[in-house]
Amino acid sequence: MTDETLTTNHPPADVGTGVRDRLAVRLLLISTFVVILNETIMGVALPRLMSDLDIPASTAQWVTTAFMLTMAIVIPVTGFVIQRFTTRAVFLAAMTLFSLGTAICALAPGFDALIVGRVVQACGTAIMLPLLMTTVMTVTPPASRGRTMGNISIVISVAPAIGPTISGLVLSVLDWRWLFALVLPIAIGALALGAVRLPNLTETRSARVDIGSVILSAVAFGGIVYGLSGLGAVATTGITTSTWVSLGAGAVALVVFVLRQLQLQKIDDALLDLRTFSSSTFTISVGVMAISMMSLFGTLILVPLYAQTVLGLEALQTGLLLLPGGLIMGLLAPSVGRAYDRFGPRPLLVPGAIIVSASAWGFTLLGATSSPWLMLACHVTLSAGLALMFTPLFTSALGSLPMHLYSHGSAMVGTVQQVAGAAGTALFVTVLTAQSATLAAAGSGVVDATAGGIHAAFLVGAVISLAAIPAAFFVQAAPSHHGAPADEAAPALAH
Image 1 (cartoon, rainbow, N blue to C red):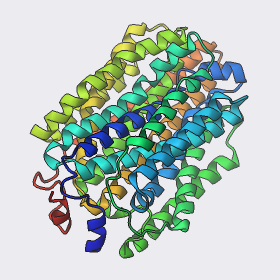
Image 2: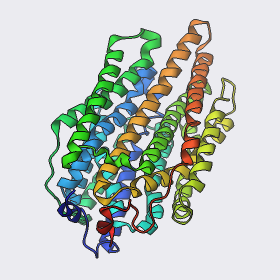
Image 3: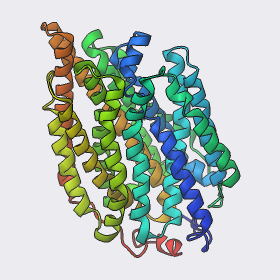
Image 4: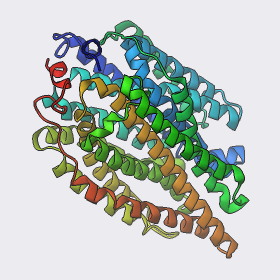
């Protein structure tokens, strides 16, 4: 990496504490909260969609999976986009795409149009998340990054958590299309405000996107998640050739993609610079983050189905039961950020991982006759554990990198987060569908079969959650003097 590149990625010295930085971060935080909220807003609506559009759960879950999958495909390109274009230009492109997708969803006559709208929405969302992370890491002093990343964790974790609550409130009085119609004016308002007030914080530099890498990443991530989602229908339609072809093609493409990036990064031309993984802290943090996102999104897809299909609750009741967990995550995030700045990651991550795993095992106790209060207690416990984990993971992962890898690190974190979320959703629905079909064939009623399938899915999630506990002990805080490894990035990080 040349000195010129480092310089162009670094804002003027007076920007770090300037008013325009705070304005930019706040606007990006609010806008990203709105777009991320839509990632899970359809969770509670799945039973309604299944009824209105006459589709099975394995098809309906694509409303969420397609969103996350599109983000996983687009996010790798954002490292190039953020370097090549100005902050304002990237923001305007992202919010324009999101607004357009929201309008398509609000007017969708059927499932196909709804999926198209979700994909367009996700293209805009995919750009916003790395833009927010990269901007914060560039303009925030290392000593206060925990506090600022705490606000980001509100966006990344709380927005998806309260999506089902908002969905439940809307669905109690309106059609599912209003989930998008009500968001559209907010998105357009953020777009207009950004066009007028958002400053440019970085200078652009010459960069090119490797088309081969873009194609490989799309085939890799798309094939793997599509194949996993296809497994959800195996129990009812049998094993299809396309499922295994998708998984195989995705795995092969992923290997080729990695090999291509290893070659391209030698000339600083990689789509995703894998030198981010030369930091053990980054690698471990991303691994734990993947497990956490699988737990979060898998739970967010199962709990509404359990509450409405098994317990017979209304959409509004389901949303209200999920609200305390989302509020707890939001309330804890700033305190967790301050605690990170003071104590580092381990005192937060280790108990957080234990609490998340305990809640996952608690979910396995849910059955056909369980009390909704048990579900509420498990969800609140899960939310508290994740609140302890997300801020330390994001801050430690990105803070362990040199400045010139911030955009690549942000893109990598976003990619892994979305692929893990999509894989978790697909895995949980796969187990649910397979076990439910088995029980139904054995003579169980719909409620008992669904409850058994959900129990099996939660059991798989509980086993996976155990892996995060030992890994949490190995996450280290970034060096406090510059927040990156002691290499050539140190001069660039000095404000």
